[in-house]
Structures are given as C-alpha cells and as structure tokens.
Image 1 (cartoon, rainbow, N blue to C red):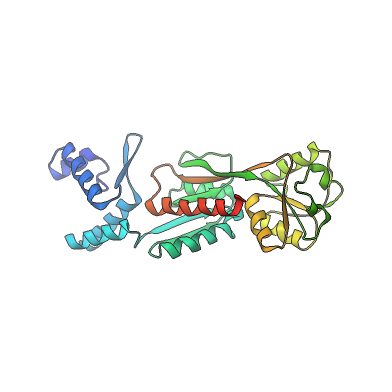
Image 2 (cartoon, rainbow, N blue to C red; image 1 turned 180 degrees about the vertical axis):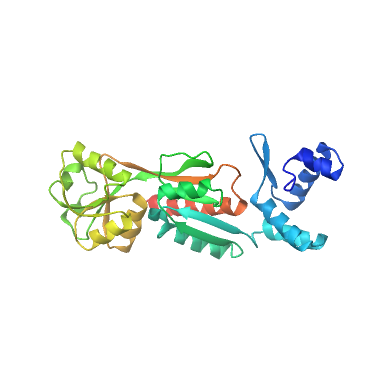
Length: 287
C-alpha cells in the first residue's frame, strides 16, 4: 500500500481481494505490535514505523529473519529518529534537558532539534518534515494540528536582593517608575505585558529591550532592571538563583502549543518524547 497508495490498488497488484489485504495488514500489525497505517479522512497514510520498515526491506531485500529483527528494533525503540522544532523559550534549555533524559532512556533514537521562532516552527511542521513542534502561536496551518500542551502564568523577574522580592506577588503598580527590561516591540507578548501594566496605571522606565526571555533574564540578573517573562524561562533562571521569580496579580496566562503534522499520527518515539516533555513541565512549574 505504500507503493500503490490505496488498499484497492494493492489488492489488484497482489491479485487478491481488498478484504484479504486489510486482513493481512491487521495480522502484520498484531505481530509487530505497532500500527502501520492510519486514516486521514478517506485516505490511508503509512505511519513513521511503516515507512522505516518499508525502507529497510526495500533497501536490503532481507529475509524473514531480517524483517523480524527490523520489526523488533522499531517496536523496542532500538532504532529510529525524531525531528523537533522549538521556540527559543523552550529550545535553549527546556527541550535539551528533556532530550538528555529521553536519550538516556532510549539510546537507539536519534533526536534532532531546530531552534526557530514560533511562526517558523509552524512553517516547519507544515512541511511535514518534522515530527513535533513547540511554539506559542494563534495562527493555524492546514497541514498542522495545534493544541495547548501547557498553560501557566507569566512571571515577574527581579535581581536577587531587590526590595520587591519580599512580596509574594507583584501587581502593576509595583513596576511604576522602576527600571524595566522589555520584550521587543514585534513580540506579541510585549503587547499583552504593556496592557497589564497600563491597566494598573503603571509606567515603568524602559531601559533595555530584548527579543528572548533568556536575554531578558540575563539583563535582570545583571541588575539592569525588572521584567516580566514567560514561566518556563523564569523558573529555569530562578532555580539557578540568578533571578528571583514572582507571580503576577492579576494572573497573565501564557500558552505553550504542541504542533504535529496533520497528515499522520505521532510516531511511537514522538508519543514517548511527549511523556518526557509533560513530566518536565510538571517538575519545573508545579511547585
């Protein structure tokens, strides 16, 4: 079916009936222990595992014992690859930490990470050449499935020893007339942060701007000023002791999105990797 594209065409090629082909596929999937095809609308699309098996069989013309070995390798995660695109807020530290744990648990899987803007992550996943994407974006793409993987609250970040660190939460007026490190004007979150401050009548003194949350936290750690950043980067820097992180009042939600190709279901390595991602989110933010 990978070569013919349909069950009907495969049955014609094999000189058998369509139900017979469907039954053979079901029996092979049962013996292998993983799915070979998934339905997308009226089409039947090969899974990543099916493509890996087909490539090995086609290249080597291996015998039955060799095919069984390939099946076992795919099923038991002894071979395979995973391609990921991530927004900088996750790709600079969070995702490499997840990858470290994942590779230690599944050393047979090769993982590739590309750091891109959220918009570029969406485009990469739309090309169908990546398995997983992590972004924060409201735009949709016909070739991409998008869903929230984590929603948390923006955080205030302060230099260690700052007088406001004594407060458990920071309100807009806490930032009034204080040195402030802002996100670049082109970043959507900048508009939301400006609205949060304006709602409380706060007018901080913007002394620096940066595009990345990590760059902002570096400036805050250096004593340049206060800021507001997304929760993952705030938590990572707070754990090092280089900044102090405090929640905001009222809360300002921030959403991290999972992007997957719309034309196929996530591969088994991708599904397993997502378990590691969710566990890392919980360990970092559920405190």
